[in-house]
Amino acid sequence: MALMPQTTVKLRDNNELPVIGFGTYEMDGKEAYSAVRWALEAGYRLIDSAEWYYNERECGRAISDFCSSTNTPRSSIFYTTKLRDNSGYAATKASITKSLKACGLGYIDLYLLHSPLGGPSKRGESWRAVLEAKQDGSLRSVGVSNFGVRHLKEMIDAGVELPVLNQIDLHPFMTRTDIVALCRENGIALEAWGPLARGYRFKHPSVVELSNKYHKDPAQILIRYSLQKGYIPIPKSSSKERIESNLQVFDWELEDADVAHLDTLNEDLVTDWDPTGCP
Image (cartoon, rainbow, N blue to C red; front, side, top):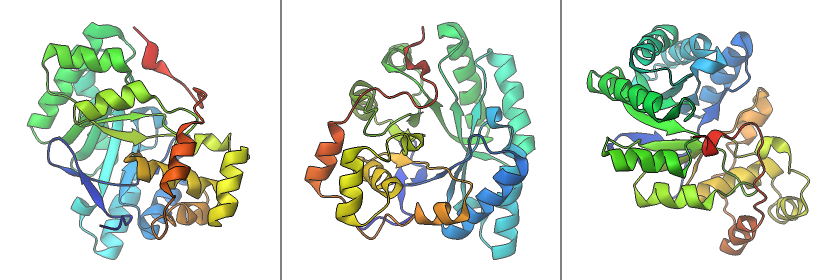
């Protein structure tokens, strides 16, 4: 089956997630609202926000306005947000309530622990609060972000309900083969929050070569790589033109040999932060 922007992948809880999304990290209120509207108009159906981004209200309003103006059902948009801090059970409950109110969407499609920071006890308490909110329908799917092998094994060993997804920094220059392997062994989807490596390697010789070969820009090469690896990329941009061009990755594909070559470029490049090794 050919991939399209609205193609979905089934998660371990049987909910379905679009194969590509739109990120809103470092976007302020007005900028976030405009970018999300442009993204939805272009065809994105997965919007990624976070308590830490301080734009949940604007993202939610953009989704609501788009749905009402185009007669698009709310259920066709997959909204993600994240818990800022693992501060325990009560604090997590309060944060979920705050995020629900801020977005104004009635429920959150995917809620993530934004990082493993806080230690085993706080992580466990926060996850318990998230699972309870899932039971009452406030959260449809629940997952984690920036979790390393030790944090995932901690959950597996505890016998708790596992996250449907781990959102981490994934691209040819940060391949994280150990985390990827563990997630795949346990049916945990992989979402790439930095599929473009923040543009730091757009001029890398291999990326330039492939860009010339396929007559595609470097961002499109890297997004297509994510898709063919089975990751869910969530590229971000505040430019309407770039938002649209980042979706032009569904009518062509990289040859297997080119994907394999990109796999050899790992340099453990940290593009923003990397808490996957924290205690």
